[in-house]
Image (cartoon, rainbow over the protein chains, first blue to last red):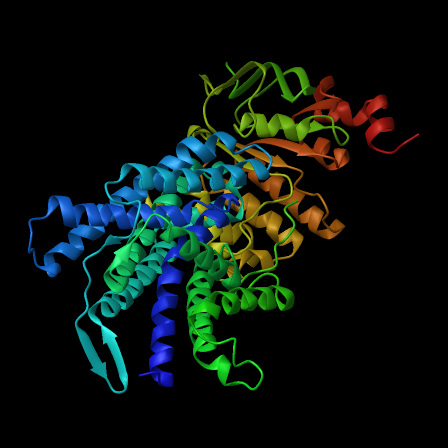
Length: 309
Length: 238
């Protein structure tokens, strides 16, 4: 079943997941110019939070219609707590420090979170089986799973809610002001620390939503799952124009579709017959990033960074 | 009567470099007070300290009888102190209307805010004409008008204007200065920092000349305008 519509659907689904995670990178970067390299691990802890709810809290044989919302809550709480905690205790003390310091802290935190989960979560030193949503549906020539429907619906709801929040709410307006000029935002009476916490929390929650979708779709999670997904989502954020939430969504979709199509069809091009298949998907994803950055360094929807006088 | 703003022996440092070295001055309600001086004299540092963006190393700031030291910047505007910063610092990707709304961020009275936005449009008609345009597309002078209008949106007891005429054409500069005169006639209390000493002193009740972190000379606007050393140093006369 490797028709073009199927591949496009696969790409869009993967891209929605990248986009959801990319929101966390792009919002934090847009407001504090920090690349939170621990965000992939926040995604991973969200998955384990959701798994904990399913496996340790809910009774056996619970219906997935009940379980999934509660897993979102559990995963969301864990991811938000870790994201906000990282901001408060790891990044905020370094606010005035040279840029390299918070960046290295982020990488350190990312490794620490992986090791904590691997060593202290029961059974997490190997892949953990996550409940799947595997029932399939045929739509024309495209086959999708229940997990895919969950992913696409969740992504649409999250992204629309975020766009509405940022554009229409008072806090969203304050968030835009803080991103554009933090000092002046304070002069308006905006508590910029609170805005930063909110940005980390939203990023954490969206990562948890993506994590639940990941678990339902692929059927297992592990302590390293955040590394590659985080890197891809970061790529999506940069591709779309880091700092721009619409860019993160677009970048995610473009990246997902491009890597899926490339791994499906590139071996059909004469001379490239050995470069197809899943094992080359990451290569094409990062090649796309390099090409976009060469042609359009600010990303697809990014604005050229104006000098801050 | 006590002054609206009282600054006593204020000192501010950037690391080891002391930028403001123990200045004292006050602003009475209804007055326009100006700080003049060359680049690096400490004028902007003084304003940024008053609005809480910088922390003083020592000294006292009393505003409306309340001490401001230790109050975070985002709370100071609620005391009635508004700051239109040097370089205008409008929010470039928000519309003019949204910029003005943000000036009233802490206010809850929807109707009052709407009224004050209309007032800003009356004071600066160009802002009304372009209300839905991104603020970054305005000219320098128009951005200055927006910055002033935005600062007024908090209904301040004291309006601090930092270099409102900087980088503007002579015509635009006149417009801005005329607006300050108008605000003064409406009873707005203003603390004005300017490099254009002539313009600032002509409309100020009180003036203070700053040099490398100290106030070296104080007097009424007219006195300073006619002071020989001021004329030589700041008004370009031999």
